[in-house]
Image (cartoon, rainbow, N blue to C red; front, side):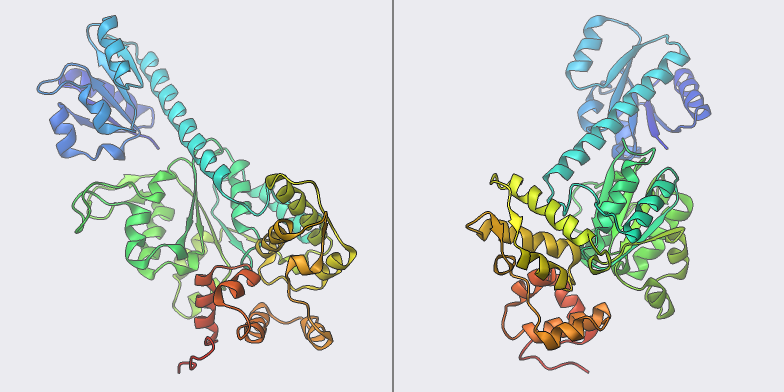
Length: 447
């Protein structure tokens, strides 16, 4: 839903344009001068400003720079080419001469808003290209992955919230991006947020934004990540890490499409589709009082479960070949192949870090290998002895395997190397140690 600010000193025109836009589904606010617009409104709350070029006090064109990057449509009574050209030079999105046809104004507004959505989507795409994603897309012929693909096709065209479950490194964000890419919102922004990566004291401001002076150090207003996804898709990764107080505020966005910035009494109305992901058991967290029951059910309209890499059969080798080809291309070296021994090692390993760990191992091998063949040694993955292999094949739970792996290797490698072998960050390794009660060497287990 688009919010539009009309800045016009003639009340008759101001009221007429306001009524026209409201009848056509826009939310509208008004002001009669540049000063009133600045004093009574946060310009960044709007998707478009419609401004008369001649106003009492400061000229309407002053709002072009003050509102940036919000587009400004200039109205002029004089229809002079010079005033219109000057406004466009200053950065106005377009202009319209009074008196204007209502239909002409509506078409122009929609063109400006559509162009702005495309620009936002393009910016998001450029940012995506710079990221190092595990794959260029999702690959898999195994029945579990085929079921995931089918469910993505079913849910993508809807506006339903989706809860994506799976172990760390299975590609939950790729699923979220695929849902967005196949949805009617594909031209609007896709905003991805790692909830665990935001310091707890900054979560509220980062997600919901704040107004100037909301707290010490808030020298200027800030648009939150949720509002940045207006019209598009918001992906909340590791949502289980959100504090309960933030969960309550997020619930309001899901239920009513309403958001308030920190320090503001004004309610903004947004159109945001929310996708969430976690590798934790949310139902268990609900039972323990660590996650809101109502938010859980709001998120769980549709639930997609991603299989672990070890559950995907021949997909592992398919992915490994794809990632090796992609890595060689990126490193500008000729194609490489896995040795027969390396292929056996790939199949025998448990892959607790899933696809992310697989990519890390392949990239390291491509960089360090002197020949066109990737060996087991170059992959650097731990090789189980006979006793370990028997235990690994005994269907350990992920947490049991994690505990076993950490205890077996922590005395021989650094925390950074241990996290790398697991395909997770050092922060995630630390969090898992705390949750499972696995002290670092030399530390006593608490409790």
